[in-house]
Length: 170
Image (cartoon, rainbow, N blue to C red; front, side, top):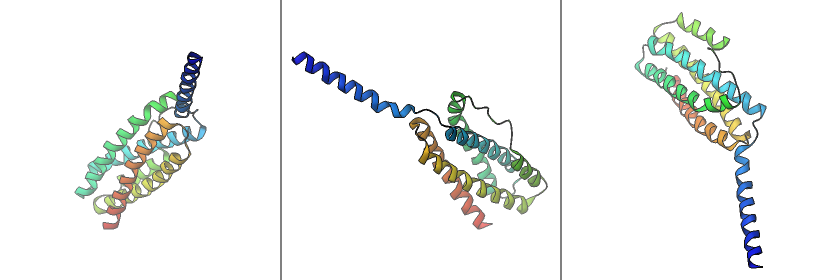
C-alpha cells in the first residue's frame, strides 16, 4: 500500500510539474506575429535613419544618441530574430515608405535643422514603439516571448526618455 501511495504522489508531482511548464510554451498568436513584424520593421527604420544621423548630425549629443540607436536596435533585432525565424516571419528588407520619406527629408537638411528634425522623428517613433511594447507585454501568453518583449520595452523606454530630454533642449 505504501508503494502505491508513493507512486501516486510521485505521479501527481510529475503531472503538476509538467502542467506548470506548459504556459511557457503557449501557441503563438497572430497578435504576437504582428507585433514582432512591427518591431522588426521599427528596428530597421531606426538603424537606417540613425546611421544617417551618425554621419550628418552636428550636435555631439545627437551623434552619440544616433550611435546608441544603431547599437541598441541592432541588439534588439538580434534578440527577436529567433522568434521571427521560429514563426517563419520574413525580415524587412529596408525602411518602410514613411521612414524612407523621412530619410529623404533629412538628406535635404543640415546643421541644427537636421539635428532637430532627426530628434523629433526619434521621439515620435519611440513613443509609438513604447506603446506597442507595453501592449504586447500585457497581451502575450508566450512567457519566453514576454520576457524578450519586457527587456525590449526597457530599452525602448530608455530611448524614449533620452529623446524626450533632447527634444526639450533643442
